[in-house]
Amino acid sequence: MAASAHADTALRQVVCLIGGVSLADEAAQSRIAEFKAALTKLGWAEGRNMSIVIKSSEGDPEKRRQLAKELVALKPDVIVTSSTFETAAVARETKTIPAVFSTATDPVASGFVQSLARPGGNITGFSTNGPAMAGKWLQLLLEAAPGRHPIGVMFNPETAPGAGAWYMAELKAPASEAEVEIVPLPVTAPEEIEGAIARFATSSSPGLILIPDSFTVTHRARIIAAVNAHRIPAISPYRYFVTAGWLMSYGGALEEPGKQVAIYVDLILRGANVAELPVQTTRKFELAINARTADALQLTLPAALLARADQIIQ
Image (cartoon, rainbow, N blue to C red; front, side):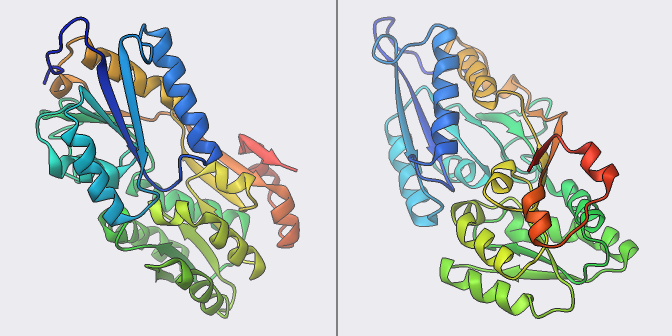
């Protein structure tokens, strides 16, 4: 669908709904700055020919729903969303306003697009860290910490894609092959995090996987502190967990994601049909390791694993 028809003198409006972090978060600020800078290079300037409204649900489901309603009511030219749940909230509110997600888990299964090559509706974007990644996370965790058993999977069933079930299903076969038990660790409130991890830590030699989830991103400081306090090796999709003290991450890395989203926004503003803009998937995956955390956990990481790392924090 083409962008809304505006008079040439009118400001084109782009609204953004992000989740999982506040607008004050360093990672969020960096991504927003990258997005705006890319738009400027493409000929769009706030106050001259464009206005940008940015809101964050901060991982709150009710706030997410309300903000989606408010942003759609503005009747913008394009809506940008940050994740699967923000995209779902917007999709419930409009079937006509073009929307671009910066990342979404399995956009076909989520109902956002008919196919990756030809979305067919009002939504398109970029996809990383889908359920097929789950087996790789298990493999890397066991490579870094051999013999760990059981392996916990922490998520909030109210905010994780597929309520966590998509990722749990993908773990069955590799877990069976590795002869490890997978234990779901559902949490629905911040105050449940420490208790869930403390109880799981009483297992014989546990490890932990975090799947993509706006809740766990929002409360990552609590999760990282609890996991490290109980000396549990853990992996997530996000490199910024590792810079904050997490053991390791492995995830899809879109090169200059803010720039990529800006290119799609620009195309739509200039008349491109969003239904025909293909969903792009990452072709690059990055492994990050925190060597200091490994030392604290008394892990001797294999040289082959360290050699494959894109980033090692000493």
